[in-house]
Image: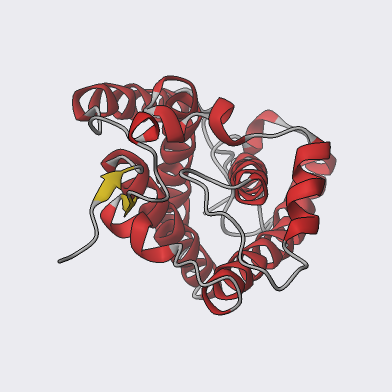
Amino acid sequence: MAEPKRLVWDLPLRLFHWLFAAGIIASWITAELEEMELHFWLGYAIIALLLFRIVWGFIGPRHARFSSFLQRPPAIWRYARSLMGRAPITATAGHNPLGGLMVLAMILLVGLQAGTGLFATDDVIWAGPYNPAVSGATAERLTSIHHANFDWILAAIVLHILAIAFYAVVKKQNLVVPMITGRKLANVVPEHEAIGSSQLWKALIVLALSSGAVWWLIRSAPPPPDLFF
């Protein structure tokens, strides 16, 4: 008989996770292929996802909330030290302290990437929708940050993948399957820590508001200068 499992990750959070990852990969590919129109639309979609995740981090189900996984530095350090031993570590119902730190890091890094992309330009063919709102020198600095920051995003992605592999091989904890199914074994998730539902209607409202905010952002952009064609 299969061991009982309990719901931990709500469906909106899981969809965000995989769409966010796909959006980052697609953004990188379109930039490499110089498909800039599609690249910008992917950027808008990522901004909408980020807005959704930030709001969901305050009003979503228990384990989606920032308050459930963002720990103080001493707690993060103690957990990191516990990983150094060979003994198995106790699995957490939601994000562990280091996983929570990675969530915050990715939100900040990708937020910076999307934000600077609104002002970036190649000075010849393409420019972000808000490029006309800043001086040429400011646009150049923001474009440089946009390019350099992607290296930090890649580093964070590699670290994330290595951490997943470490937990799977060394600590015998599969972190991928629960992010697909939403469920973890009952012996890991006490009944009082399981979530009752995915709160789909609330998620749809938050997504609609996030998408509306991005639509307003695009519509409010200043007209492009004539030198770009």
